Image (cartoon, rainbow, N blue to C red; front, side, top):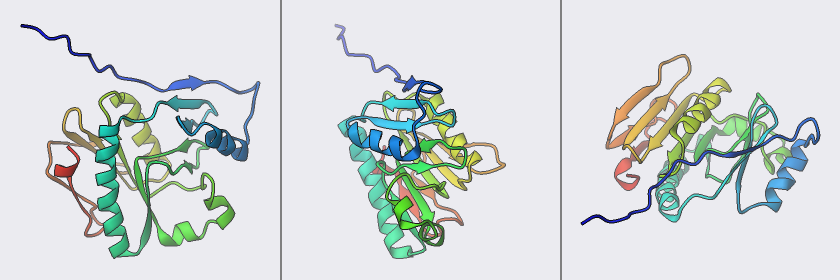
Length: 201
């Protein structure tokens, strides 16, 4: 007996080219995102908009557990500030990206004028996490992780729930691939932070 189960296909972002017909300022792009909150919208270094549908409820549940662990460590450690998947950052190359979770040293964050922190702050997080959903393209996420590293991120985790793998990104180092790890260490950057993956898989 066979069952006709729906196949989960990989979804890549819809890319909208605006320039040179339309050139959005940073403030205009922020307002555009506020008017379209039902979508996950990022902007690449070429000024193109990358539009994705919201994640499914199951992925969001796992991301909530992930952020909860990072939040608890951040509160105890006190040297930095953490962010969830709704926070957008303007990278040095001009792209605006929203990792699923991020962490920035408090001194760097507080050096940004408060009016800029209210929108897509001009900073690249030291630490980022991307959590792959069933429909996310692995290649798209890998490219995004490399872009973070190229713009100043010191440690990045791409957690692939689909294959139960983790790809660890560091500057000037080959990507490390782990198969079904139980935990992840924040290393020297996030000293003492251990992510329990049993709540993520």
